[in-house]
Image (cartoon, each protein chain N blue to C red):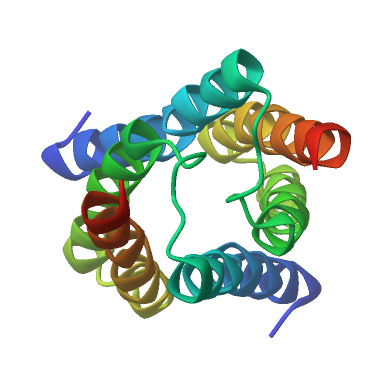
Amino acid sequence: MTFTDNIGSAAATLTTMAFIPQVWKIWRTKHTADISMGMYVLFTIGVALWLTYGILIGSWPIIMANSFTLVLASAVVAMKSKFG
Amino acid sequence: MTFTDNIGSAAATLTTMAFIPQVWKIWRTKHTADISMGMYVLFTIGVALWLTYGILIGSWPIIMANSFTLVLASAVVAMKSKFG
């Protein structure tokens, strides 16, 4: 991998993994009042489109990163629906 | 633009714009207790790396989407630092 590829991989890893502490925090506290439902609905639809885009262009890094993020962002939407 | 380009553009627009309702919600309520600082620190670093990647490969869509997201994600970090 080139230096540029490494930067891209680090970027994808961080923007995907970032949602883990948020999912964990909500799971632990059951509190979501300060979280914007609008944000997570738009973000989840956007990530689903990124996944579609990855499939259309046949890019495994885009498919993998966005599959993982889709699960995490959907979990926030589900928990926000449940906990309010 | 091809169909695939349109899907990618819609994806980029949604995952960038998604942060606006969250920034607005925090600005309005001054409450950030349920927001994970870990998430926004990792996400902001990741977006800064996406911006670097966009500059390295000369991709204006990546540069523009991530510049905008960097401002919004940094605003959440700043407000979380202030409001706790």
